[in-house]
Length: 120
Image (cartoon, rainbow, N blue to C red; front, side):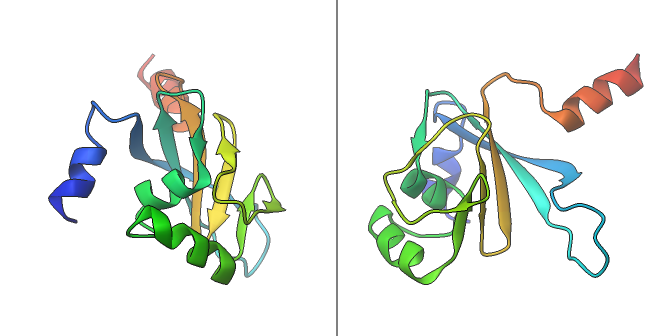
């Protein structure tokens, strides 16, 4: 990973990626379980193009147009192709085997809540 991407994910940037241990797909047989990534945002919303770039699925913002034309992208289970689509905390993004749930900065995620309960 290059330095520019690491800098964007620093504490000064409105986006921060963390891994969750919860899988997003149910217990269907022969269904590959996907790892859900939690993306904390400091702003009210981010655009779909910003999400694609911060997740490392595209290299530049301009590549979002082509990525969306060639790849099935779902937001909250619905197909989405608008790179300017506003994504807010609680939204679920799925594309190219990547699943990302957006949360507000400081919002407790399910794995964090489970860890806190275990420590009590």
